[in-house]
Length: 155
Ligand code: FES
Image (cartoon, rainbow, N blue to C red):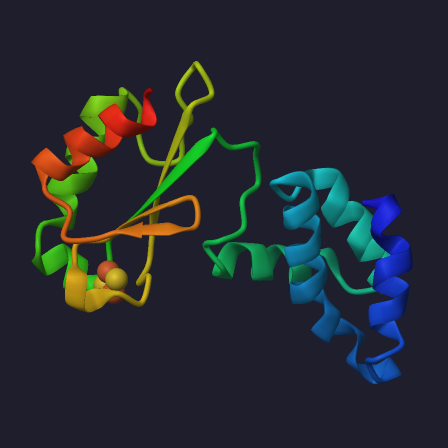
């Protein structure tokens, strides 16, 4: 994270001194954009840089599901499990994804190609169930659509 300090210093000049803790979220986003995930060492360095308690950073990481704590595969499949998706078969879709990929949510395939995660509402409830593939939405997911998706991403 150390190479991001000049950027964080610039950001810091825009925040009142008493609002340093408000920088936790944007700093974590920038770290993840840079590294792909937030490592333990990043938490320690950000704690020291911002002078905030480590628990404050860990609470942000625990609250926002978009933060990753480990490297992910080339394709990150984030399956929504919230209520609208759940009512339209999300559990079955997630089970199907798990079987197809041979991994459980939170895991990455041995070849590093796929990471499967479950997340809360992706904001596309009208097209539930929804799976986000990296930055793109795949909607109205069925077993057949999942099969086609995995075949497409496996090429
Ligand atoms: S509940 Fe799944 S997108 Fe909203």
